[in-house]
Image 1 (cartoon, rainbow, N blue to C red):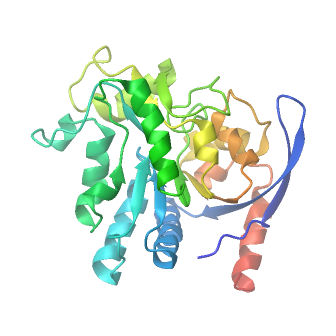
Image 2 (image 1 turned 180 degrees about the horizontal axis):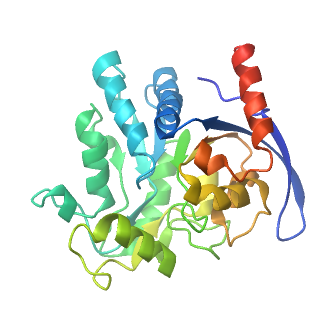
Amino acid sequence: MVMYRNSARICCKTESGLKGDLNMDVIIKGDYEGLSKYAAKVIAGFVRKKPDCVLGLATGSTPIGTYRELIRMHKEEGLDFSGVRTFNLDEYLGIGIDLSKPYNEDQSYARFMYEELFRHVNIKQENVHIPDGRAKDPEKFCKWYEEEIKRAGGIDLQLLGIGGDGHWAFNEPGSSLASRTRVQALMKQTLDDNYELFYKNAGVSREEMPHFAITMGIGTILEARNIMMLASGSKKADVVAKALEGPVTSQVTASAIQLHPGGVIVVLDEGAASKLANREHYKHMEKLKEQYSL
């Protein structure tokens, strides 16, 4: 699948007052299932076109449906991951995968990826890269991770979600839009959100959960040749509108999507798209693309 970047032309204004034009595809699907299938089709297109492509992967609840559809494609359609290389966005500092524990008791992002995607497809272990939350020297590891991405030739497609406060990965509000892979202290909203989604069910107290993480920086993410951001549900509607149609600001780090010079695609369900000022325009452009097989 080819990404066409002429679906929407948006004028954005940064904090510094600079203006720029942005071309991006904003795809609005009826529900989460439609969103997930569309996103998986995009990823599969990259894998089929370039079998040794480099994928940037994300965790959280939103991409789970996409990963399940990719697993189905692998099992039923022969989608081949044997040459694919992956780099994950982030990991909690101080923890790592522990396969001796039940899945619900292991809150590492490495375990999430193992359970939700990797163990179900034919990806090679040596091609999987996830930040090491147990690194003895985290700062040294972060520099190494940046170099590994470069040695792989850069990321062909970076998959992203968006946090409740508009963050990408663990780039919390106030993070530099030029930031690199680093250790990041987590803000209260992120801790609250992740506690309710993951740690509470594992019987881990709010105080015991990790308060720091290793994360790719915004500058690192923007170097991917293509990016695809997913968002689902009406709870994300306000922050999606800020990221796509508001000013570019470090207070909403996902707004950096407006600065990306390459292929940009945003896949939303109706709930997440409900506050977009240009919502009908995006739908109109999608219909035109379908009509003319673009």
